[in-house]
Image (tube, rainbow over all chains, first blue to last red; front, side, top):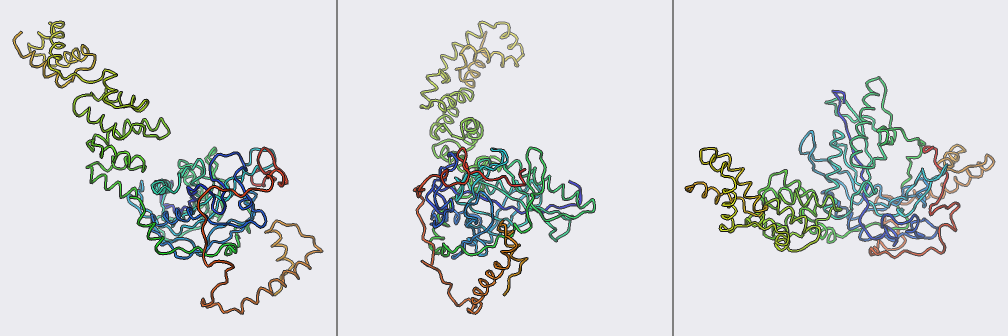
Length: 478
Length: 97
């Protein structure tokens, strides 16, 4: 980026809520069904059909709002947002306008450039999703799938508090993590369950006014968030530095070309002619309902991170890795509660367990009690670390009790000094030259001799104990 | 209140409707009558003390989150102007050409 410039970004994030049925009808929200098989008179906008709101969608939206520290309003109003588009069969979207569900929250996150930052949340409102238009399926025509029409959404509008594309990405990842912890959405950008539009402007460093902004749309992955905003930021700076002016317009991001291009729309298309939805009375929430949702919120990621660091004496980095997802955090705590030492459990979860999960659809396949047992077997000297990793892989693949698996695989370390002494004697007898050199002062040969003992035991000797027996034998008279 | 010919044309454009030149005066007159009728609402006190009329209950009644689709009388293929391979088919918008 050219020096002397500051970027100002605000994000509008749409999140599909994890409900079984749609916002205003009983159609399924399941992803991936054949096109137009999850539709009914309501979500197709057929004449005479009336919307009936999904209580679970409202409950999830309230939880999201509370977790973001928003004020949840006792009364809000659903409104019609009118526009014409083939994937909006009613000709309007039921959304909220001047009386949204919640306002005035914050989201704290770690900015790559500024450290801890708190971004304002201007509003959070509920609405329904539109259908999906597919422009490249048929020549000269657009294919429309209305399975998504009516899926419940929340829109979260941030204040223009983000100062770089990397910061926007960090905000979004933190928001995703928080929403996943709440269990309100799977936040999968590739499936479209989390979508983001960005308002971007630039100004001279030190300036305080907001300049003309553009809206960047069509950002389909977390990786593209940073790229798309970087391209648009650089475009705006180039425009201003060459004496031009930024025009208020919508830009579409093309990930293949890593470029933005203006969306060709008519000026009037932004006139949504909002008015209160006449088919739905106001959305009224009792203080008891809101209080119940507040008290039922789970421990959120930042609080859990702080607690893990303090309670388990973990570094901030380890605590952050272990709390990155709620499932991993709960798994780690279960391993500790099953008796594993906290740091050893952290090491196992961060390496073997997460690597295995990465290869198996994020499934943590080794039960917490089994992992705790593996940790204990290593600590007690029954298994070497290498052997324990093999036991972990075996338990992950086939299940079973770790000790039984270790015994079946012949991995249990031998700690019987009589047995060890037999292997040591064999090695000393077979390597008389090295033994003589060791006794004459070449103590570095201990490594070689110990290696031979481990080899003779086929890896089963307890290395610490074997070394002790070896040292004793070498110290005694030849 | 009078709706002008240009306003009718702009509304038609917003609604993506084609309007004949000879129909414009009649539409202007009809729209003006509608707005005059609605303008009577301005006589209602609007100081916040008047409760807004809501047809039905005062607050939304919720549905439980169950998959129970209301069936269509007949499938989309039968009422869609164009339907192919399970999709509704519409002319492609200019911006995607």
